[in-house]
Image 1 (spheres, rainbow, N blue to C red):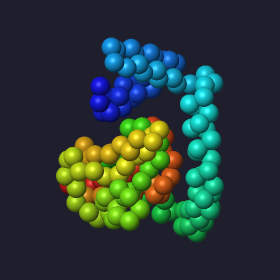
Image 2 (spheres, helix red, strand yellow):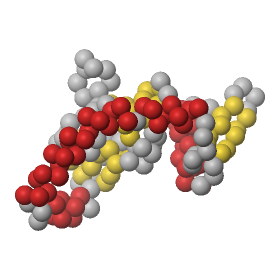
Image 3 (cartoon, rainbow, N blue to C red):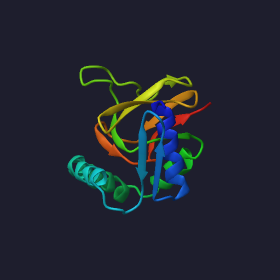
Image 4 (cartoon, rainbow, N blue to C red):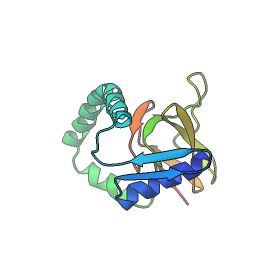
Length: 162
């Protein structure tokens, strides 16, 4: 079973509402738990999430200031975003725009992309997962800061398909 099949299984379990699924094959076993059932792996994730979020607090405060100055511009941005395709996170983990700290980002705003292009990397449990584009178009907006935690189905990019 490869990583894409595992990610697909995780998405399916999350959407199904099941609290726990166990899959046993000849050469491996997988247990996927959702919900509030206490377990050691979930505690690990809870401990990882607050650390990167503390730098995000000033960014949230900064984002609120412009909306106070120009509240009429926010609804216009929302209506403009409706024509774009949202690329969402297929897994929980840490979002990285670059393959490594000394390399350039995978994509920049305004860059044209093709279906299958790598947009970012999400680290989950010490595994780095390439997130590929399902659409061709132009990157309009990057919605997540580099090295930030992301949730399943969280919007990452806005892509203009035209």
